[in-house]
Amino acid sequence: MSSLRADLRAAVEAARDSAEAEGEFRRQDGAAWPPISLERPGRPEHGDYATNAAMQLAPVVRDSPMRIAETLKRHLGLPPGIGEVSIAPPGFLNMRLDATWVAGQVGAILEAGPTFGGVRADHPRKINVEFVSANPTGPLTVGNARGAFVGDLLCRVLEGVGHEVTREYYFNDFNAQVLNLGLSVQARREGRPVPEDGYHGDYVAELAAAVPDEIWAEATAEGADVGSILGRWASEGVRAGIEESLARLGVNFDVWTSEGSIHEQGWVTRAIDQLRAAGHIYEADGATWFRSTAFGDDKDRVVIRSNGQPTYFASDLGYIAQKFSRGFEELIYLWGEDHHGTVARNRAAAQALGFDADAVQWMLMAWVRFVRNGVEIGMSKRSGEFISLDELLAEIGPDAARWYFGSRATTTGIDLDIELAKKQSAENPVYYVQYAHARCSSILRRAADDKLAPDTGEAAQLLVHPAEQALVRRLLAMPDVVADAAERRETHELTHYCLEVAQLFNAFYRDCRVLPDEAAEIPLSQARLTLTAAARQVLANALGLLGISAPDSM
Image 1 (cartoon, rainbow, N blue to C red):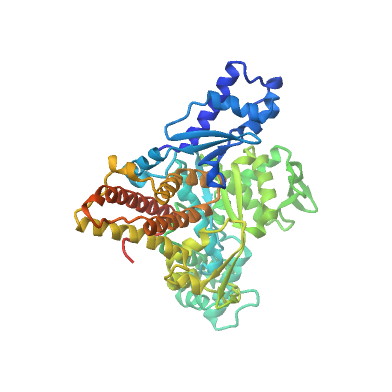
Image 2: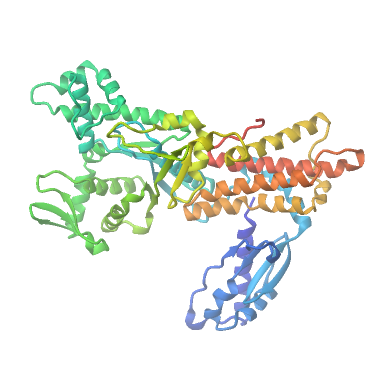
C-alpha cells in the first residue's frame, strides 16, 4: 500500500510544474525548486495534511505566499481520498481526508495484511550497520543493551523500506584490555590476586577454571606471551557468550569481525600505504601521523606509535577500507556519546581514502541510568559490579526491555525503572499496547462464536463516528511513520505510534459498541469488527518491527 503523504507530495510537485509550464511561476535566475514537505498539522481543525510549499516557493518565484498557494490549489490534481483543500495564512495548503474514503480504507489495510506499513525507499541501498561492539572482556551489561535494541530496531526499519542491511559486530581482541583479561585469568588460575588494572568479576574465575590444557600449556611455555594467548582465548569465549545473550534478546548478527583479523588480512597496512601515497601521512617525533586536519579534524592523529605499535585509529582506517571493499554504499556506526572526538577523525579518514564522507554516518547514543526503588545502580566490568543483560532479561523480559530502550531518541538519556518495567498494568506502556492487541483478538473470537465476521464491503462505509474516523486515520499513518524512521535514522516514534494506536483503539472501544445487542445493529457491528481487525493487524505489524511480541490473550 503506497503512502498517501508521498502521493500528495507528488501532486503538489506536479501542480508547481504545471503552473510553471503555463507561465504562472517564473523561477528567478534559474534557481532550483526547494523540496516540498508535508506534515500532519498539530491541530485537527487544520486538516490531515498541510504543506508550507507556498512559503518555500516565495523567494524563488518572487510572489506572495498567499497568491502562490492559490495558484497551487488551481493546478492541484488530488489523489483519491482528499475531500477538501483550504488555504490558511500566511500560505499553508491544508488538506482534509474524505470521511467515506477513510472508512473504506480498513479493507485495504486488511488486504495488505502483514505487509501494511512497509514502503519502498526511492533509492534502496546496501547498508552496513555496526552496533553493540562491546569489548569481549566480560558479559554484556545493561549498559550495552541500548546499542543492541537501537541497532536491531534501526536495521528492521531500514529493511522495512527496502534497503539491504548487514548487521555487524566488531570486537576488539587486539588491545590492552584483552591483555589485561588474559593476565586476570592467569592470576585466578594460579590463585594469585588479580592485577590492579585487571578484571575482578566472578566470570573471570569461571574462565580460569575452563582454560583447556593445551591453551594453558601454550600460554605458559617458555618465552610465550601469556597475557595475549590467554586473553585471545578468553575473549573468544566471552564473545560466544555475548552472541548467546543477544540471541535471547532476539538480536542476531550477520557478521562478526575481530580487530585482529583487520590487521592479519593486511587492511591496516594497505590503508596507511594508500594515505601515504596520497600525501596524507607524515613522520614526526618517531611516530607516523595522519594529516586529518586537512579534512576538518582539530588535530592530526597518530597511526603508528614511536614504539612501532599501531593505534586503535589505525585499525579504524583498515576497517573502513575493508567494509567498503564488500560493496556497501553506506556505513552506519552506533557508538556511545563519549565518542564525539572519534567521529571527526574517522570521517576524515573515509574522505582521505577516497570514499564519500556522507556515506559514513555515526549515531551517538546517550547513556542509560538504571534505577531500582529510586536508587541508581552503578556498573563497572573492571570491578565486577554490574547487572548483566541476561539478568535484566530474566527480570523484565525482552519485550519490556525492547520497548524501554526503543522509546527515546538516541541522543536523549534514559532512566530505566526496573520495577516499573516489570509491572503488568496500564502504567507499563508495552503492556498497555500488547493488551490492546489481545483485546482486539478477544473481541474477534467472541464475534466468531456468535457467527459474526468483519465485512470489508459496503458496511465499512458506516464508520463515521469521530472515534472510528480518528482510529482509521492513525492506522493509515503507519507507512509515513516507518518512512520517517528510516529517513531520519531515529526509531523512537514507532513506540509512540504504537501507544497512540492503542489509546485510540481503547477510545473507540469505549465509545462505540462493537458487538450487537439486536439484529438491526449487525451491519454496523460487522463494520466495527473490520476496524477491530485492522487495528489488530497494524498493532501486530508495528510491534513486529519493534521485535516485540503481539499476544492474542493476556
